[in-house]
Length: 175
Image 1: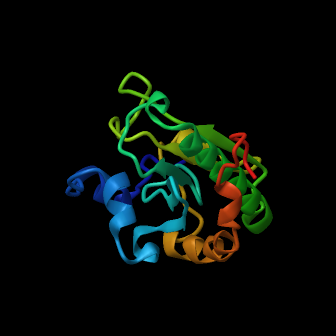
Image 2 (image 1 turned 30 degrees about the vertical axis):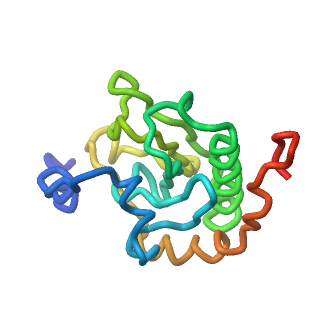
């Protein structure tokens, strides 16, 4: 048995310069979605890949509006976020064979939010047996695919999404 498990790539996150400002405000203003890892943009929110994922293809869905709680979002923003979450899970089931998902948000410091002032939702694909001895014993995650490769695999189905279906009709239901 090994005495040490090394994950030197993780030091970039631990020791690296933390990006100044809110990433959920800055990323959508960028011109290069691939560089920013943005997979889809809606009227109220957007989908991007997590730069430091818990699992391969870990996505985040954030509103453009800089708020810390769901109570501060309009219903149409909440609807679009849920629409993106559902579509994201469908795409990942079909394209990377996800067998399940963790979906949710960490709200407030006590809730575990790493970015407290800008609410966002996580969609983490899961597979049977994806948690093995590495994270449990070794406290090390193994990513099975490069972020840019995963982006290139997921981007085409996100490009096919019908954005009109995210808009609300007069009864506030998704069209």
